[in-house]
Length: 180
Image (cartoon, rainbow, N blue to C red; front, top):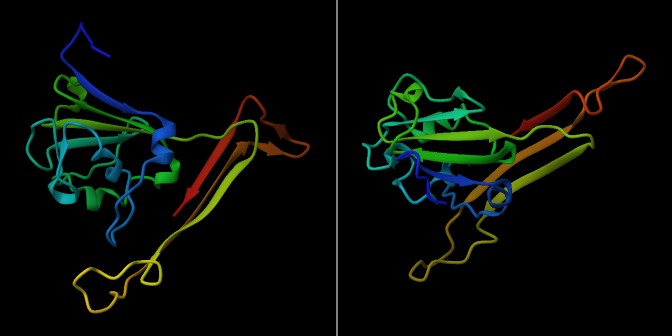
């Protein structure tokens, strides 16, 4: 959609795509920054990611309005430890060129992540992101399959806050928990 009132360029990715997009992970920690590489104005990855024509590591990232970057140059590999699990992200947006002045330290762009929240029904997920040599094919020129093992366990749970005989939080108070 074309914005005529300002020069801001935004790429917003909704919950359905966040849940369904494949990630290419080569032995590194899974990170919400891996999703950013699908946006048109992102280039590079990890410590060399740049947004909107800015220099590498000259971007800002927030989760629900709170900065997740450190006081050093932005490195997606390092900042991934402050960012939530991919299972806890509901949507994200990448703003370049003309974002708000509150993000003045960001030279190329700002990534805004939104976390999931609980609902009136209890929901949860348990997962194991598994890669190993038993499921991988041998490289074309390789004499044998390389030994490679990666297990990334996690779980999420959400729902209404209910304390029996004390508080019924349906339609009022919710929780969401994520562990990876």
